[in-house]
Amino acid sequence: MALEHAILVSLSERAASGAELTRRFDASIGYFWTATHQQIYRVLGRMETDGWITAESVPQPDRPTTKVYAVTAAGHAELRRWIAEPTAPDPVRSTLGVKMRGASYGDRAALLDDLRHQLDEHTKRHSLYEFLAARDFPDPAALDDAGRDIYLVLRGGLLMEEFWIRWLTEYLDAHTKEIP
Image 1 (cartoon, helix red, strand yellow):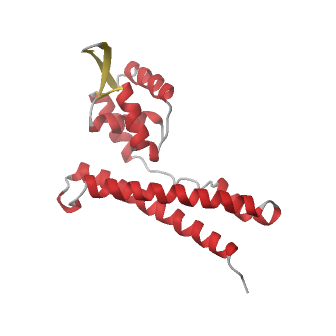
Image 2 (spheres, rainbow, N blue to C red; image 1 turned 90 degrees about the vertical axis):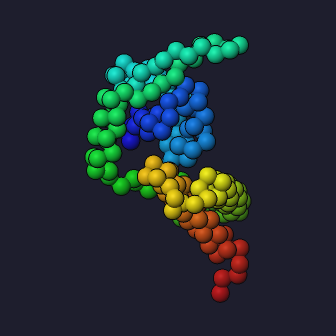
């Protein structure tokens, strides 16, 4: 996936300034696709040149004029094309998994400390996702297609965090208890 497609999805949901788009990446899309402020602005310029988005200058009281970006017909066509193309499975790359496998050859105590920290981070993220699900989707059965898509991606995030919590807990338990 290219950053362009993540931006097209976000702007299809709602037009936004570059700063707002950056905040959206930090708060939601960024859990699945990350980008820096500079990358987003650089790609927005390229997408505008390619005709996938338009930018409207919007005056703001007590602040400089901002550009608000929206998806064009060509951008919607590109997004439809990209969504329809087959997706290769994402390769699994886990630095943590390699460290866990090689723990016998290094400082296991340091790794276990790192795993406890990772477990804490995944537990916090899981709690955040549960909060967002309860706050934003109290009745998933009543959602329209767009809302259901967002909800199901959030559910995927919950399931991913549950995977990490279970795996890290199992590994930590196996190395902090007596093994017969």
